[in-house]
Image (cartoon, rainbow, N blue to C red; front, side, top):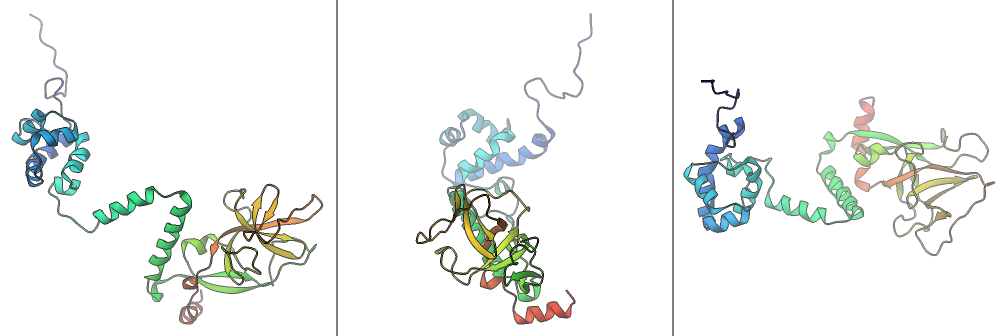
Length: 279
């Protein structure tokens, strides 16, 4: 009589195999399921309906005759209103996501990209404002005082025409290479006369796209404008678009990445410490 062949490494009958993780983890989960189901006032039938399994499956889990599939654990937690940590009996810690944080994330996902960017910018500014001065890293960015003269080489060469600005090293300031002061009202209401704007030099990052704001130079004049296919536009409708011919020497100095907030300016004490440390 021929010997029966045995498939190596199965350890269980076909159709009832379980991974090492299931064998080690799931037995402790079964008691938790019953405890939290009863605590929430759910009957087995309703609980089974919510996670789309048969009531007999839930009964078998709670009596230890079988174990839930790992893929069902997120649905089980959702139906019971608990976290995975609670399901496995792991004490909550500071890294757990709170219901408030979960609600914030759900609201954030409903925002368009522009509003998401605004929220992220505000969050970053608030976080930075909570860091004590002594812990803040300081960096220096050149503030352009006046433009390069027309026809004198690279229009983006501002050596000798800048003063150092001591600012906090944030995500926004790290991306910037230059600081310009807005002159006039053509970019209101977004940018006001005297606002300091952060500028990333041309050639860094992605190419400038239509609709983005950048700093341009034409001759000896510098402009902050919105780049469009047919010219440079102001945000203030009272100002007409600027259009140029192929003979005009118009250069893009760099894209505007944001405004320099007051809280991003280093204090006198921070500047003193920065200079004393030779940085």
